Length: 260
Ligand SMILES: Nc1ncnc2c1ncn2[C@@H]1O[C@H](COP(=O)(O)OP(=O)(O)OP(=O)(O)O)[C@@H](O)[C@H]1O
Image 1 (cartoon, rainbow, N blue to C red):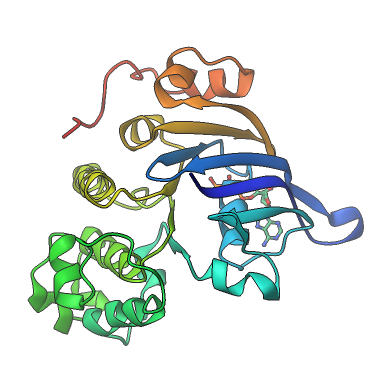
Image 2 (image 1 turned 45 degrees about the vertical axis):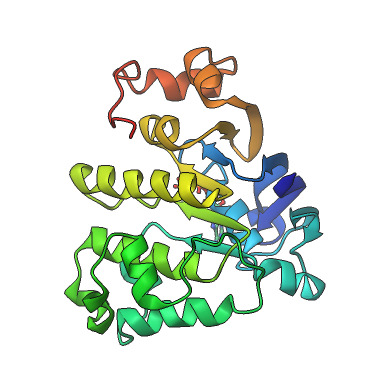
């Protein structure tokens, strides 16, 4: 079954001569329980696709579907509520005045009408904190009392609490130290495996994409230029844009993270 699908999506910013065509007819599908990596250099349109899926930007044409239901426009509200996004900067994605416990409880409240994704997904802040490897006492803290990695775990707990049908992770480790990146990635992989999560993982880091993704879709100036199983695309890149990304990482044969 397809959990998430982007169909012939076109997105533009601005008007007239200043119009930027950020996404130009992109299409891909994410089978349930799998992770698709969206790879591409800065400005290739990765975040724009995710932002359309959660209603932060409008599509010019095309469609975005969750379990076959469109998320676009007023009629897409219900399907849109089944998409959760975790952003690059955990400082800005959490309300600075809200305790961690309240933030996560808000996520749970948002997901109360969603079907249970998996029996092992807790539906209370303490359980969700434990799921992401944090002591339940963290519920009393404010975001500024956490490290960047801890904050990103809280953002993940909040998103998972809303029982998403699909999780969009936009550069979730880019702002973290390399050692903390590894911890957050291992956590992401464990959750993927335990909950059978369907997700789109946006990154410009090939090692990270190789580590967590099943498939990869490569964007170049708003167009999808290559897609396939992650190992195949990264070891035998066909499109010049993919080749350039692979060539820019000389250590590509050496895994940066150890699979758990
Ligand atoms: N709010 C905006 N107004 C105008 N143009 C925008 C806006 N947001 C993005 N763009 C442009 O749209 C294009 C795609 O941007 P987008 O952020 O989707 O790329 P990206 O691949 O996610 O880049 P990065 O890896 O740097 O986050 C770029 O040319 C960008 O300059």
